[in-house]
Image (cartoon, rainbow, N blue to C red):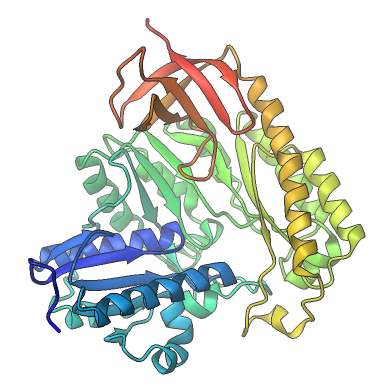
Length: 435
């Protein structure tokens, strides 16, 4: 059956999962555009590329459902071809080929040239930093490394992304310059592990030097750090953070747990004492820093005592930002040999309890901001509000600043100074300061 789409060979790239997948889709789209292809992101197209996530059960389920949904469209003649790439495809290709054989072709995370060839395009090595960004124009992700060398017991990412591989500083500066030329003002640095950056290329942890180069890029106003690993964190980064106003006083550092026996089983290479001291050192070095972390509850062997210890620690540390996940039992990981002995209902209860504590902490910290003047960047207009963020907030996961759009006009992507007038647990309300 012929497709019902009028325009032929429009490639629709569908992205699932994390910011690293967003980045990969943008690179793919940049390559396709350079080959003269008509490419769109999550719109109508008769050729579909699904960039999947294979990290935890929910993400895998969403990826499989999306593939099945597009296979139905293919059978109904609404699309011609469906290609699948990304982490799920890397991890489960033989199973997927067997279970959903009607997909035209499956590709892993490192097979971009092969995927391009299947789409009738050539891989162009010279396109360093050429991407078709899908985020709002004022911010973009900058992936500084691929893969991970850490042995964490619960994590399947090394299976899907391979060993750690840093991108050279000069390539990242070139990419940042191209993004700035397109109006990007905020760079969000991502990797599986920022802490490890440079060890493979420069034989030392070189995140600080990368930052010193990136702050020189004209047009970039904010640089934000995501996904640092606690063990071996390069403390010279904090000196640069203090010295360079472009680097946001913000750090995303997933800590996962605090009970020593859980940390040991997770193979995190640290202890409660070391982790607590690291956070104290962060706050001593950069008192203004907003620390974001993520935790896992319901890991195999997590007792009620372990959980109570984690709860108390969350209360004591008063993280500015925190997310909590329930443990997902992933095949081929080290923890898969352990018994997944915490019932799902208990996992969910524990996650809810942690988030209730965090909600209260966040509310209290937000109340302290009432009356303060802060610089915000405007991301979008939603209903009767312009929605912005402070340097202490990352898109999609953190607090937002709401400004009444019936009283003032603001441009998306612009910075403005506001006075905080009210606050809830995860939102701030503000009015523009007219100087």
